[in-house]
Image (cartoon, rainbow, N blue to C red; front, side, top):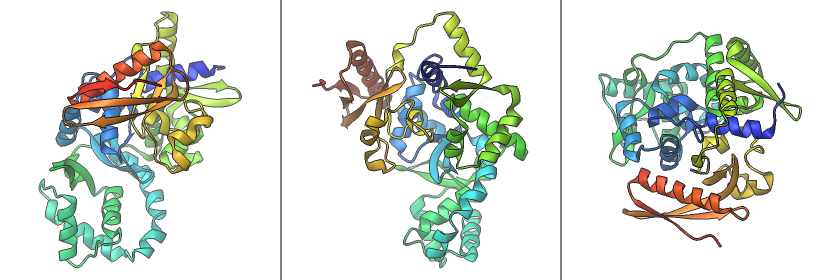
Length: 372
């Protein structure tokens, strides 16, 4: 079906809950997007708060403590917030490729199968029965039992055990999270056959990120084109395709129908569509090709030198319109906008609303610096 760039942007805002129907709580946001990049913990918390207006940072922490959100490495070797019931079947698809890709690094660190097995047995024996352990305590446990953790060995041991479904990050421990056994923390995971999981993977990605291309999905999961095409075939009429300038985009049929209903009702874009998205936000980072949202002329400002570190972005009319920085204390936060061009008064008003929402999320008062 032919479409326009404006159609793609409008539907992406809907998919990401940045316009239209928002979510009621942080866990619902994670279910909608399936995985939210979360190596920057504070930024990831705001990514959820932004999409669930009225929630506060403590709600995200409470969801992690209750196990309604899990933080782990489901794909790309990157920490994400994921729905607990879905982590298992995601790992069944991604683990083999991720672990295979670490063979050389494990050899460099002199991590042998015996080390990995002993590390697993020690942690499962210690945590069995509902226990939890901090990262520092786990390092001490391994060191005491003759497993060296220096030189990134400890990190790779934790990552391996998380990637293979043994561990995940669980409830808060002081200023960090503790580690728990995944099968105890999530006693009733969803069980999907391989092909069913491939279909679920692409449908869930597109439900929270679409419209997107097959290459976008393959980049996001670090999967294969063959698996992506198999997933589309399994999904069947749950998906529909759009063509824009000769490129095929995929979207869930539900989202396409919702967008069509809004257009028929002439529902205006919401003021919330001017958004202060955090660093590493899925709206910007969740695609192999980001040109639709991020003008290549400004890409180096968002990701300086292509170093993989994504700055917080002001989104306006579905596009990256500038950066924003913050200065925070225990009682207040000041937002400093850095537009890529001249902001209209409506955009400045949107930034002010976004700053107020961000301050409310953090539980502090908010202000906005003037724009030169």
